[in-house]
Length: 326
Ligand code: ADE
Ligand code: ZN
Image (tube, rainbow, N blue to C red; front, side, top):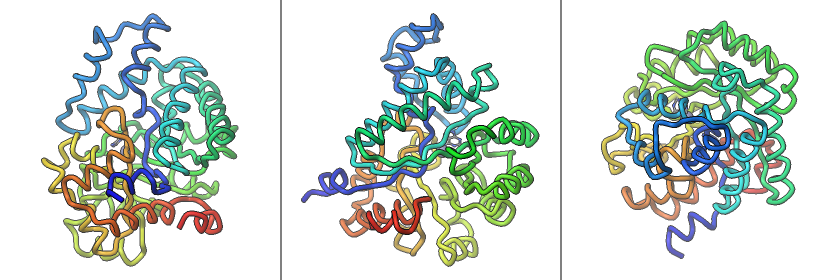
């Protein structure tokens, strides 16, 4: 079996996916027309051509502007449904999906609008495809901790359908320590916790996410390799890193995929996983991220199988549910 065939045949979990980052140019275009929103583009192709980024912030500027076409419950339903259909095609049997409430509530879209749209799609996809889904509510780190605390409170009616909280958006200048209190409160409420750290930010941000936020997983974390002691801790504690190869390339965290460290981290015994992050902006869903590693780094079959296995080990499924796939 070719590696490409194996990649698509293996059951996989995806643990680092921003639902707003799965908005296709086609759906963005259709929703803009539906709501009479004028976009700074004249065609779907022009949207696609605009997706060239120099760093995280240059991407976030387009990502937040793009999300403005999401206005009513059906828009959020379509967004979620399109991603879950793609999961089904790619043999992604379990997914833990991040959503950014503040991106929507700050535009006047109520919590109930996006939650109802998401949950309706999740219910349909569970029934049609048997896929399992967990939801991660992420706070925008360029906003204040008080706003994150308010978001946690605004979500109260939805606590039973949210599994974890996360931290995303502009990393540099917004260290994890800024969110120590809101994460403590989230943990007290029983949520799992994750945080983006060490994508553009220094290893110190990963230390903070571990020591101050007590994260269950680190999103990205690729800059841990700059600190031997940190790498050893992540390995010893088997703290999962949800790595996103195509994202790292598109956001210039690396210059070329041949420089990516994920297989080195894997071979060193760290619990790394492959993920797509914002697939419609970065040029590939989950299988394309695996394929990019094969093309640039010559991933072996054993490494590929280990990465698929890690995706379940690092998930928030129960031990019993994990055993079904490992
Ligand atoms: N929000 C969406 N994608 C992100 C990323 N790669 N890093 C930080 N915040 C994000
Ligand atoms: Zn991310």
